[in-house]
Image (tube, rainbow, N blue to C red; front, side, top):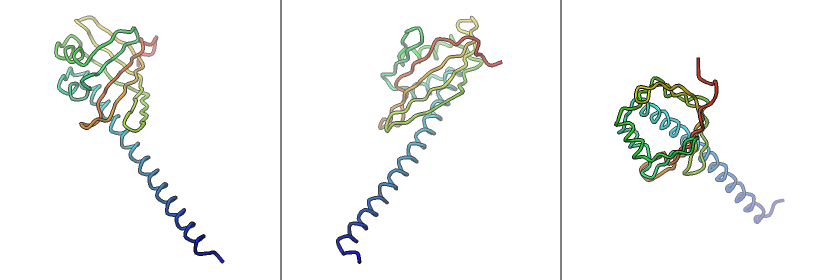
Length: 159
């Protein structure tokens, strides 16, 4: 026969296990939702760059945003907005593949292979590179805070 004390302990453990399990499911679901949100923001960002859409770029980038290229050059939010407004860059392609999103609480990193093709000041370019973009959840929603891009890859352009 189980004592009253043992029965209470068993019930308490079951209740705790239930809440832990429920919290784990909620966290997993929330993480998946966050990954989907960041994936959508990346899609919006790549399209905004392709279209030189400064308003969308402005909305998505954090005010203290920094991009570091594979050659060590850095760009701020103001630099990217000026570039979009200038129209120096004309994109035929600005699409990413092999995309992976990882979420850790209020931070997310998206890594993907990016194909860029177009002209800069009338001079053609066509290359593929890897990038990792970091997003942080803010009171205004997810914001793109930091990007790092590789140097162009050799012989990896889509045919």
